[in-house]
Figure (cartoon, rainbow, N blue to C red):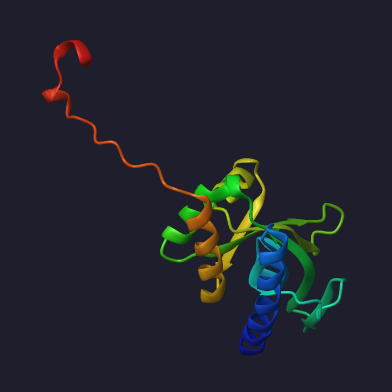
Length: 180
């Protein structure tokens, strides 16, 4: 699936790149794959994990669907989630890219009335935005960002963000007593 997903991503990305240049608001749609495991331990009834984020060129449809369910492990596809870049999130994109392993951040929830159901609510590429979601006690998982999208995000970040130069602090021992 990963190879087919990468091919689909490249084709959709090529088309969406043209839309980015015309609209000036960089955005794309993604589909999120969530894996559900039944009773992975004696203490858990269900465990979920985000397994992949794919570019959604519209071929996945609009509704969540089950790709596999053998009673123990199930894979669900959730299409149509928007990812939009915002100039005020430049630092968050920079931090994601400079981490050495850029990722998609996926915020997801489970249903209170049926804990066997989970779905993605939000996808971002901003480290800071993911941090704010975690601070708000949301579930946020991450999966690797493909190289093609790292380049796209890097180009946007280079255009919209400049890290502040680091200011060297003088050691306290070199400061006059009235400046300490």
